[in-house]
Length: 265
Ligand code: SF4
Ligand code: SF4
Ligand code: FES
Image (cartoon, rainbow, N blue to C red; front, side, top):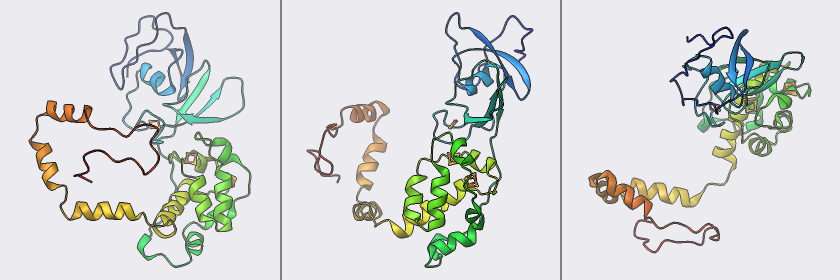
């Protein structure tokens, strides 16, 4: 690991990850990574500040765009008792931050077969995730969630048997696991919510007939000739085809627009 502690005047930028180029004259600030002090330029995300400090990610980093939930992080400011949580790729590092990433948190992940669930899926939830029904309504999960999801509310919906409501309410979950790490009732909210969304998609949501029609087209080999033609083209010709493709106008009425060439539909 490169030495970028406070005592080193000259600092070499690391070449790992998406290389960080701090703005000219950026103010340098102290932060604490796993209890050790580093001086980093302000304006970096926690993830980039950690890399600036010389760490190379092999876990705890994925999309870098706030989608995958791999970079769950707890932090405190010196002089402030409150424990805060965020995604390292989305949270800007600030002076005095004490940072600890949590790339994995153990959760309840029971085996289940979605095709063979018992008819009463609420009862299925009760069997697979009995802890959900021990929620004490403290709200810590909601306060911890970096996606601003009302976690306590989707747990309450699950308890009431409103699986559709819980599926919708938890839809933005990135599976970071921070909520579960703070729950006094030891609930794995995010895996229970994943189960509910799967049940909802498989057994409750009406089937998308147009999607099934397209799957049937694909299975019948309708697009084989077109795909073979594409694989024979040069990369430049594929790019040209992509750039010049006919696009749906931004304000087209939903379900109304069709391209001029409908031979591939
Ligand atoms: S619900 Fe839990 S696992 Fe999902 S994003 Fe929020 S804190 Fe992370
Ligand atoms: S942290 Fe746990 S006990 Fe508290 S509201 Fe959330 S699910 Fe319920
Ligand atoms: S790296 Fe994917 S959410 Fe941060």
